[in-house]
Length: 217
Image (cartoon, rainbow, N blue to C red):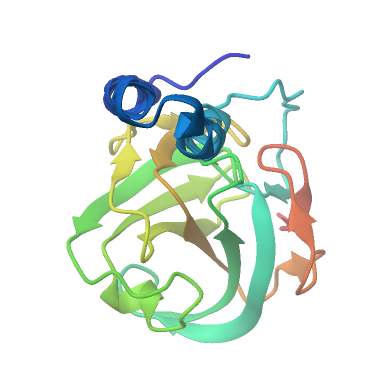
């Protein structure tokens, strides 16, 4: 299994803690140490599982909007996007549990025209106010269809680190990685009002693969 580059520090710390606790358990508890080591091993394995990098067949897209993350669609509604669009847009929100793949991918191809990091709170990621009050990063891409698409990484109650690699002027390619969020979070995508929405609330998405909307020239 391939692991994401963001895993190095976390896995190193987890390995040290596991070794110390396991050794102490064996020394002090002897045969009863399994009561601690077995559940600890499960947690340790989940850390590796969280940082997995699955193989995905990424296609070229022009009109399609691709799911930027693995997760569950929890919101589709018309909203006011005040940071970049400064007007009405269709918001699609995808919630990621700690068990989902947490690689963040571009939803559309085009040019990165805006990027800004915002410090903030750590409300639970499914809370509607987390979109504007939590720690987050907002990125905008002018798509190949000449639409401005905004998407936002949002930290949650457990997620405490947002990583993003893109910068203004970069070429975005739908389905390809631009960042990572550690341990459960949410992604919001803001689309033009005339966008054809294909997904529905409750849908499970596969990042980089599933088409969630379509924009026309």
